[in-house]
Image (cartoon, rainbow, N blue to C red; front, side, top):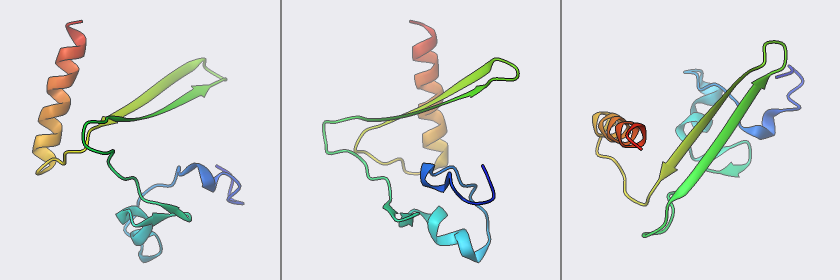
Length: 91
């Protein structure tokens, strides 16, 4: 990302503890956009992103799928992620 901020609209900002960024990392508004909201009951929202490094040919992807339910804590989120990873590995 350039220091001029021309790529800021993509939402690729690190969350830091500085007071400047605290609100944007908390989720109420990020760069003029509203925060991510869960989908309606019965729906699944899928967000994807990809990266490619032309110098090395390496690539990577990230996928997040969420339903309308919320996890109770980080341990539940991690457990569900592990269970889903195992389910995908067995297919």
